[in-house]
Length: 259
Image 1 (tube, rainbow, N blue to C red):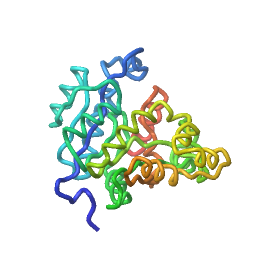
Image 2: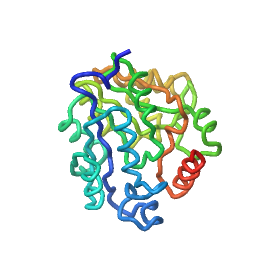
Image 3: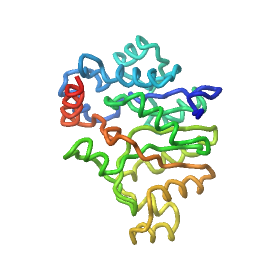
């Protein structure tokens, strides 16, 4: 079956590797590097691992959002285009979408376990009918893959979910989702506020434990005039990124065990 990897224009990818203002990143500080994207894992910087996984999935055009000189230099060495980091992730995605256009995959430089098959599976499972697709992992899948994993869970009627830092902006209409992303960004750990954006009926369903993640994303998309899809990750490790030093320990242990 054909997927967006086979379309014209072909699927491109945007990798977020900008620096957030404020305190130094704890992972970069612990590893004594200028930016988290440069942290070596099995001898390869995290950013290079992510780019290799995207290339392995057949994505040729990759842009990296970065503002640290060392990250910019690495991205260029990897054959990627470089875009300046904007005020926040959603603004950077908007700038990337204006530059690359649809269809565009979005991920992050700290997605150190990213595998090519996760990308191809995600694109295939998203299908051809979505303007936007979001990859999420169910708690049981994450805990099966990495017992004891500490993640931020979004609890809905169909279970607890964790984000996987993989988004698909399949069509030009996805621009509307980026604008909504800016509004929802601050509420990612407060799902009741996201439900409230869908109206009183959806908020009541959420509070009653009857609002599923699939329904919430589809309805949020419909509210802004796009088709939005929640895709369940086939591998729970897709939810594991490197936000803190303990995550880095987990990732190194997993990759070391793989040999």
